[in-house]
Amino acid sequence: MIKVKTFTSQLKIFHTMQELDELDRTVNDFIATEGIRKVVSVGDAVTTGEKGEAIGLLRVLAYEDPAAGAREKYVEKLEARLNEWGDEIEKIRAKADKLGASAGVRYRGQIEDLKARQEAARKKLRELGTSGGEAWDDLKSGAEAALEELKKGIEGAVGKMKKR
Image 1 (cartoon, helix red, strand yellow):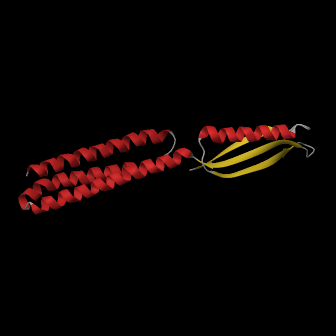
Image 2: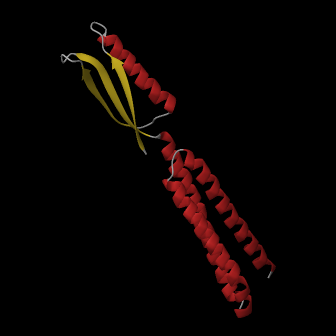
Image 3: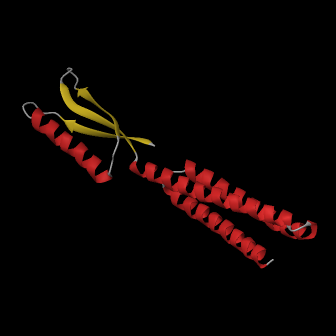
C-alpha cells in the first residue's frame, strides 16, 4: 500500500539553508522511525505570498507502507496452510471412497463439513487481504479462528480414518 505524507517549512530570508536542512532532517527522521524501506517519490513545491515571494516549502513523500509487506506475507503464509489442508481433505475423501459405499456415506457428511470450513476460512482470508488499519486486527483474529476450526476438523477426521 502506498502512503503519502506532507511536510512544510516556513522560509525566512537569509535562513533558507537552515530551514531546508531542518526539513531534510525531519523527513529522514520520519523515514527512519517508521521503518520505511521504499520511497516511491519525493516532491517539493514552493508556496508564495501575495506578492509572489517564496514564503514556504511543501515536501510530499510517497512511500510504501512497511506493514503492508508484512501483512501480505502473513496472508500468503495462511493461504499456503489453507491449501495444504485442502490437500488433506482430498486425501481423506480418497480414503473414504476406498472404504466402500456404507463407510463412504458415513464420512461424506464430515468431508462436506470440512469443505464448508475451508470455504469459510478462504473467505476470511480474502477479507483479511483487502483490509487495513484497525480492521486488520479483527479480521486477523477471525481468519486465524476459522483456520483453527478447519485444522481441528481435519485432525478429527484423520484420527477417525486411522482407527479404521
